[in-house]
Amino acid sequence: MKLTFALFICHLFFINAFAQNTITIKCDSIYKNKGITIKLVNFETKKEGYDGEKNSILIISQKVNNKSSTIIKDSIFSFVQKIEFQDYNNDGVKDILVQNISDVRSNWTYNLYLYNPKTNNFKRVNGFEEIKNPSYNSKYKIIESHVSSGTNWAAFYKIKNNKVYNYNIEIIDDGSSKAEKEYRKAIKKILEKK
Image (cartoon, rainbow, N blue to C red; front, side, top):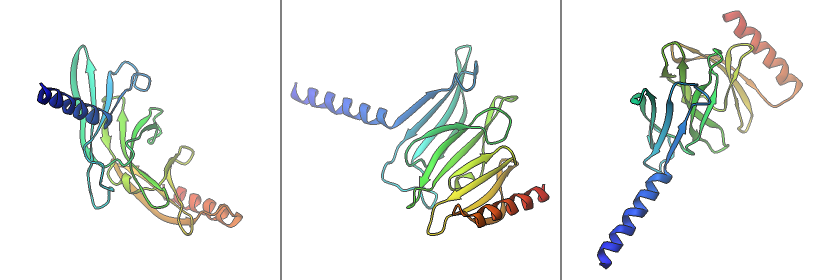
């Protein structure tokens, strides 16, 4: 009896431990009438995410007419298991960001999955997880990276064929009038390349 009770307690502990490491989000408010659900399952908590380490499985699935299908199943790293929704391709529909790593200065990186409403599919953007503190500038249709370090700096990117294109322009980002002038010069240079 004691052994059975002990096994039962261990089983409950295992189930609860596993459940605490799984995040499930029903996306009805974001992707209306699409039946899309995101599940992030963490299987390793001691890794830091460098050198291509993986600690999670991302599953994006869809349920239509009581039939479920998997749209994306991807092995990734996510340090804090945070999922965000923002439009990164200027189509007016939010895409999925899954937090990747946080460096010493709390500069976050993300895995990005662009949603295509016409095909009802997601595509991972290769190389996006290298961009620190990304934000989408819809006015110029570029991605900006503002990084905190010994000297704060900014860099600029765009998405081209589901890959990150680096403009190879970096500027000091210290809030000074000189930095503001450098920012305007960088934007002008980027617009000339388009």
